[in-house]
Length: 175
Image (cartoon, rainbow, N blue to C red):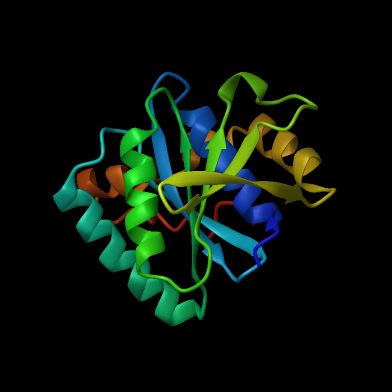
């Protein structure tokens, strides 16, 4: 029985940095980890999600999962209309035996002491609310990274479509 998800420091920062980089648009990405923790976030889009781009991105995410022994534990979204991102989450969930979560980010709460997150998971034709937990140091680390302007350096899959040499995994972003 699923009880919720813990966001590791890297996932927390990458989700919020992606949202901060595109404050007036929608952002969408994938959460990787195990049953109880999102260890990492893979930023995918800051433009409307199209089927061909999503298919290409998901193939690359699948390869990354095979290489890192992680699985897709959810998606994240920040923006106005979450209908398409929620459909994508439902499609991913239909292919997994374990829960797949949808993490919604409220930009107006970045940065603040209030949690900017709401966590839900598909449950039949409805969505069930779950608890999202954040590691104690994550908020402090995010604020420091935001101050170092790491949001400007974050790369999503959309950015890679313009320059394939860029790393949308952001492997070295937080080091």
